[in-house]
Length: 185
Image (cartoon, rainbow, N blue to C red; front, top):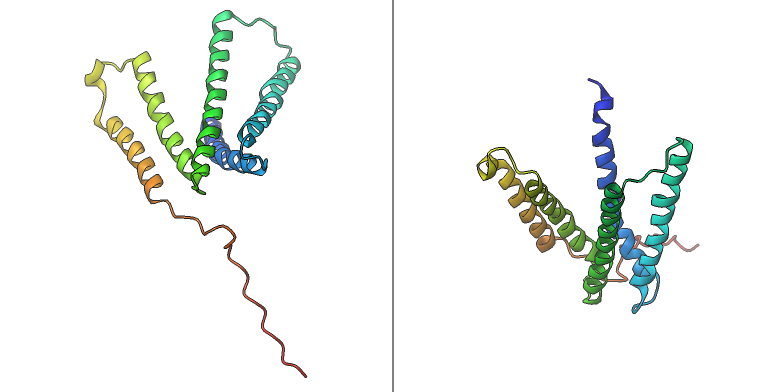
């Protein structure tokens, strides 16, 4: 079997890992700013810096290295710009959601917020994609496993949020057992 035909899966799993860590690091960065009033905005500023480094400078270098023409057709330009705006707004909503939940005393904010996002986003994607590109046969072309998958994704997010393990109280990290005292001579 030709492994290069699975490159899409490698990249998809890379996204799963990096986006799975995204919420955790974003929340830690927000809290690490030490500013309850403005920490989320400071964290978002550095998300923007990271996007600039990763999504502006890196592709520019690749385009230059490949000798690309600098023709950007209007349709592709505007749709890509809208995609970027949607991504940035989504990242901002993640921060606001993490901050609001954490402010309520929920120290599991990343687990709760990201579970809802990662279950809900594929459902939105599937529905919008289906509206844009209707299945052959219309609604009759929708097979029951597809509907079951959407129900399972929503149910899974609910179960993860509802029954996630509670973290240990702050300052109660597992401490190493005390060393045995040596007998006095």
